[in-house]
Image (cartoon, rainbow, N blue to C red):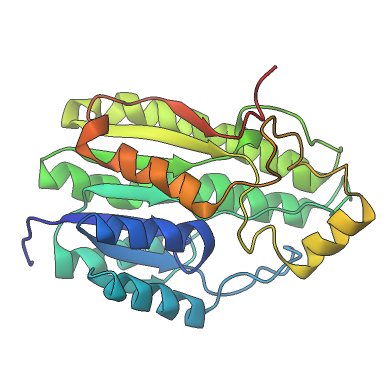
Length: 273
């Protein structure tokens, strides 16, 4: 195993959007990156997911930023594949310091209240996938013995109920993102003895391909006032991926060394009552 003074960061959903932004910024901050993505569509999800070409572009950008990167194609819903991806990366860079559990999907506009498949796919990706990510990385972080930071990307829909329309898709999204908070709090207790901090980040709508795609464009055109992503108090319809990344880099670093168990909004005032 190669030892290094650099941090080692595992990022899921790293092929594009927020995950790519986190990977590049953490590389600029001096981390070696283990970038994981499914790189394939899910039949029940109504927009295209990332591709292997997207993951390759993330790798190019990380290297352009002066970082080192190992990539792996793995579905966060499959613990065995995820563990294999983490093991392959740590065999090159050493054990893990930082985890960003970023992979997630949404099904806005799918209005069937009885769609079991979309419910399962959203919950399995957004909640089971986060637990799988914790399970796949915690042994490495503990083995390293120097503490670290787990950052679980939830959503404002993990703190509020606005946007629910009775559909299986929105119920699944809200339930899964609320569940991430429970995982965060439980993991914060479980790993504090190892000086591993665990926090969740809760963005409002973020200007990434999850939102900017043909399906969502049709949704916004048909109902511009009815999106679950509307309601920011500040005069911006969306935040940028970099706004979330800035919080991720902070939580990963020494300046956040005593911050754990926190659900931190990046919400442009969405949650102000």
